[in-house]
Length: 497
Image (cartoon, one colour):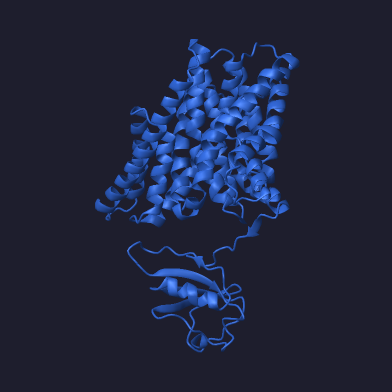
C-alpha cells in the first residue's frame, strides 16, 4: 500500500503543480514560485512528510544537470558570442563581489538585529556564497515563457550568466564549508587553484563530451526505434556530469557546455530530442521545487531571527548588492546603455540553486545549518516575488522590450533535409508589382507552399491573390538570397520554422 500511496500523492502534487503553472502564466507570475508554494502547502503540518536533506540534495543535483544541459541545447552560440566577455565576468567576478558585499552586510547587521546565534565573518561569507549565483532554472523558465524580446542581446547575456555562474558559487560554498565546519584556514591561493582546475576541466571535458555525444548519436544506428536516441542523449548528459565531477572538474559547467555543443552542431532527430528534453526539464523543475517546498517548515521561516534576517538580506541583495556588483563588472563594456545595465542588475533571480547549496551545509553538519537554510529559502521567496514578477514590466518600463512574433506554422523537418523553411508576413512592399503570387519576385529554388489568412490555411497557386497580413510558409535551397530579396521589400522579421 505504501508504494500506491506514494504514487497517488506524487500524481496529485504534479497535477496541482501543472494547474498552478497555468494560473501563473495567466497572472504573469513565475510558475516556479507557485510550484514552491504547492510544496510548502502540502508540507505544512507534515500533511506530506518529507525531511531528507540528502535526498533533496540528490534530486537537486539531477534536476540541475538536465536543466543546464537543456538550457545549453536551446542556446545558439551565435547569440552568446557577442556577449561572451561580459557574461563570463558576471558569472565569475560578479559572484565573488555579490558574496563579499552581502557577507559584509550580514556580519554588520547580525549584532544589531540581535540574532540568537553568533555569526562570524566566515559564517556570514558562507551564507552569502550560497546565494551569490543567479538561478538558471528560474531565469530560463521566466525569460522563455514570456512572449517578449529584449534589446542589446540582454536575453542571451542573462542566460549565459545564469547557466555558467553556478560553478563559482559552488566552489565558494565547498571551500567555506571546510573553513566553517572543519576549522581550516581560508587560503585564497588554494581556493583560486581549485577554481581554475575545476573551471578548466569542466570547460574542456564539457566540450569534449559534447563533441563525443554528437559523434555517437550520428554514428549509432538505432533508427528502428528512434525513441532510444532520447535515452542515449540523457545517458550522455549524466555521464558528462558524473565523470567530470569524479575527475575534480565542475560538472555543472561541463553539462552546460556539452549542451551548448550538442545544440549548435548537426545531430540526428534534433527536433525530437529537443521536445523530449523540454518536457523532461519541466518535469524535473516541478519535482525539484515541490521537493524543496516540502522540506521547509513554514513555522521556521516565521521565526523572528530568520524572518528579519531574510527580509534584510533579500532587500539588500536586490537593491544594493546585485546592482553594485553588476555596475562594477560591466564597467569595461561600453556598448551597453545605462538602461541595459539597470535591467541586468534587476534580473538577479535567486531560486533552486541557492537552496540546494544551503542544503549542502545541512548534509555536511555545518553548525547552525538549519538557520542558514531557512534564511536562504526566505531570500529565494523574496527574490521570486519581487524580481520574478517584474521581469517583463521592468523591461517595458526601461524601453528594452519588443514583441516577439509567434510562429504560425509548426513543422517537424527531418534533419537530413537541407532546404530551410521560413515564415514571412506579406506587406504592401511585397505586392507593389501585383497582388498574385506569380507577381512576387523570389529567388530560384524557392517555393511558397502554404498561406495562412486569419484562421484559414491553404495551398496557393500562381494566380492566388495575397493580402497584407497573410503569412507565407516558404521553403528555399538558397535562404541567404531569400533574406536579401525580402529585405528589399521592406520585410525585416523572418521567422525560421
